[in-house]
Length: 320
Image 1 (tube, rainbow, N blue to C red):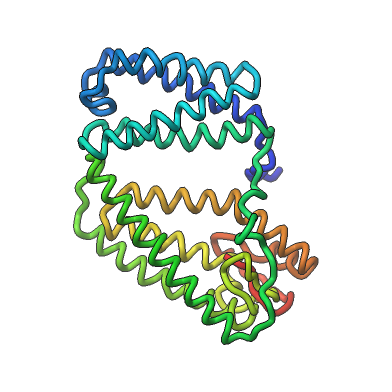
Image 2: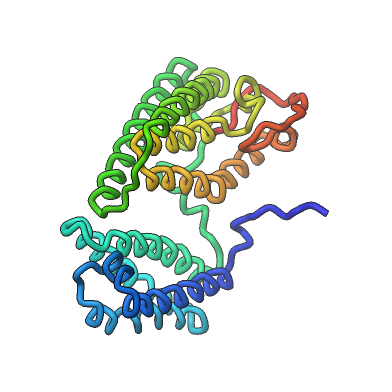
């Protein structure tokens, strides 16, 4: 009997209520630790007045989370805005004073969870289609020729590398140091990061070139590949650009000596796999039909199969 793969379409309000139950318990345990374990109080609140904060946070964060567990769906409008407000305050406090960094980080995680669970609680589903709106709406590229697609793809790669692989990681590294969350990193870790980046980057560039030249499209969904290419790196995994991008993100974290940047890259992999990929593959199946289904069944998404089966479908490349 096969193991059922995780699918965000299975998530409904019950999952959201389960999350808020865990959050209420975690919040209650944290407040107990704040008042009984001085190192926890120092690491998560710094010099802030714990008693004063508890007067508002216990009823709104812990109580609000409990209300979301057993109350009406509109209770998400209580817990989520409060969590975001506390997170903004804690982040500002930690950045200005270099205190309570762990508290700020925990609240960032709580905000992400509260927003996601709040949306699911209100809608009773994960609205993954929201990703593909406006400039990110999936539509085939115009038939303007391989040269045009190669130039557009090159420009997109420059922006992707500059923003997601360097500017954002550098900002995260700054916050990590400012919040005193950084850990000592041996030199070989940074060397490993350089090696990983040097190995992943050519895979991403090769994949992009194949997509642009044979698939007549770009990595952006607004100018998606017009054909289904299954040659080059796409014979090995279905989404070599995503694999390369995640590898480069992890490499950036190793080079910067930042465990938070590595976590950022891995979180991006999960978001892409659970929210973005299903929508892209649904579009590919709708446009290419049986050839894509044969390709999908023959080639794994992330890891090559030990025995590679022949793929005969068409001529161009799935995005990612």
